[in-house]
Length: 407
Image (cartoon, rainbow, N blue to C red):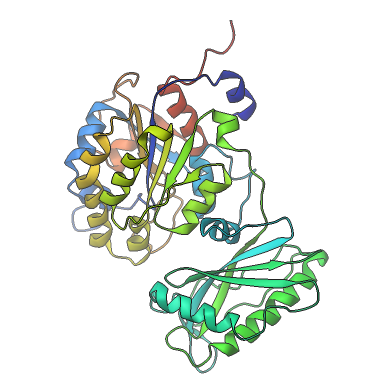
C-alpha cells in the first residue's frame, strides 16, 4: 500500500506526465465459445503494441477474494488503502455533481426503480431512464414540500445522470451509519432504512419518512415510480494528492460519481462536453500543459458487463483502442491502463477477480515477454500480482518523481 509518510519525504519535482486510464470493470471471464475474455476477444492493436513495449501485471482492488465497489476500487487506484479510507457512494455522487458537502451532511445515492402494484421491484434501474426524465422526477419531488422533515433539518435532492440522483440530509446530530435500501435484486420490495447503532436511529427515521413521502409523490409515474438509497456517508476528509504525491492532478470523466471520488483526493475536475472516449482524450489535450497527472475514466465497459452483454463490452474496449493514437500523441511519460474492478458479463456484476494492468513507460520500464493486453498475459506479466494501492507508487517511480530512500 502507498506509504503516505514515506512518499511525502521522497517526492521530487519533475516535468513528466502520468496518465491513469481506467476502463471501469475491465476484467472479465472467458466465454465458452472461444475461451476468451472481453479484453482478449477485442481487436486492440494499439493496446497490444503498448503491451509489447511495456509490461503487464494484475492487481487486487481491495484484497484477495474481495468484491469491491467503484468507490473502494478507485481509492485503491489513487493509492489510498480502501480498507482504511472508507467512503460512501452518496458523498461520491454529491461531490461529483459539485454539491458543497458540509460536516453536517449525510449523503445517499438514489436509484429510481420500477415497482409493481404490490410495491415489489421489477426493475432496479427503471429501464435506465434518460437524464431528462430523472430531472423531471427530482423537480416533482422537490416541489412537493417534503424536504424539511423537522426543524433544523433540510433535505436536498439533485439529479445526477440517467436513473441516478443524490439525496443530502443536512442538520445537527445526524449519523450516516445506516443500511442501504437497495436489496440488489428484483422480486422483493425496497428494504427499510435501518440504523446500525443507537446514534443513527433518528437519521434512519427521517430518511425512511422522506422515502415514503417521495415514493408517494411519484407513485403514478412510469417506469420510474419507486426509489432505493445506497451508500449513506459523510465527508471522509481524505489526504490530497498534491500534498502526498506532489502532482497537479486532473480528472476527465463522463459520470459524476468518478469526478466525485477524484475531487475528494484533490483532483481538479475538467469541465468538458465529451460523450465518447475520443472526445475525452481530446479534452485531456486541451489542458495537457496545466497538469502532471491525468485520471481518464471510461464507464461503459462496466455498464455493458453489468448488462451481461459480452459483445457490447468488447466493443467499448475496441472504442478505447481506436482512440489511443489521440492520447499517445500527447506523449505521456507514463501510461497506466487498468480497471477499478472486474465486471464479467457472465456474472452481470462486479467480481473478485484480479484486474489486468498495462504499464507503459519507455524511458524507465523493464519490458516483459507480453505481446498482447489480456488477462492471461497479465497474470504472467513482469509486474506480478499486487494490491491496487501500489500502482500510484509504481507510476511515480517510473515518472522519476521519487528520490532515493536512505544513504
